[in-house]
Image (tube, rainbow, N blue to C red):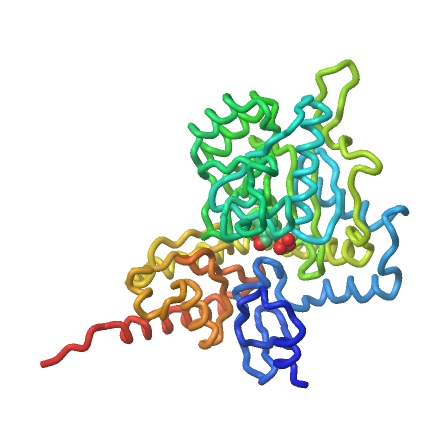
Length: 432
Ligand code: PLP
């Protein structure tokens, strides 16, 4: 049986996959089973900050695999403790504690449980509610999926966000947030992505983030940040929200991480600020609220996963990849904006987190019923460039943070060529 036949027969049909079979990767390049080379500006959807098979990560994983791959969280794991300190000191840069899991959805589940536990035990709320925002994406587990505001993600599963305690509000709308917190005393937290990736690289405004923090403090709601896609240098800072509000002005109560943290090795984490939240006589530290028995995982934070995480963050820091991402991202955006291309709209760029919004009206007639972003991503793939659609009208670039100027030039050249080809294809025939 061929691999194609195996895939058809044995895998669930939940992905609309491209017919591309990558078999090898190195840095920003990937080769398929026919030997065709691609420039990977999708990066496993923001998962490979150092590109494919970075020697430092390969070595860390190989060494750890030879030493100790897994032990239960019943025991103490040295690499986990080390990584927790690095996350606290170098990424959050705020005092707090972490829990390790395997994915972004699980990291968000942890934050959602933290919020509910805080509501019940500290605020004495019977049915806690959590606010999330339009166009958000928080993952595919039951909790994270209903926290996600897009109906295409949660629809058809026989529950509603309201039943699970979520309130979805418009993104960046301070008035509505203020009004809702005023009128709904059962709200115990808000969960927000500083830069929304899945729906088109849309950032929270600094004003909104500041105001949301003030409102959270006023109403004793937790400020939770979903940093699964935008952290670890992707947007130019280790902490994604510092791209929006630099410095220490924003003090999140909880943060979720995954994707880039393990360079492709499954690893996620959530972090909780060390802050006192109780009203009673005994101080309650938020970061100690999930005590023994309240949460857990078999695989999360294994020695192997944490070795991958430690190696990844070390390289990002030592090679100053945050600054590199800022510089290169800006030069890519500047060049692409200068084209004034008829098929491109606004280009939203935060480090190497870049969204090219498309002139969908012009692309739609060519797209054969597909979303313009999916159509263009396919064309780019045929031309040797892997990218990711972000909603129907945006193409996302999430290349390794250590790409070279040549990689960036090659990607821009392919994008330009494909766009120009589409323009000439769509231009009405001129008769004489
Ligand atoms: N949160 C955000 C912001 C994401 O972008 C994603 C994945 O795209 C998730 C959560 C879910 O992460 P995972 O697919 O690892 O569960």
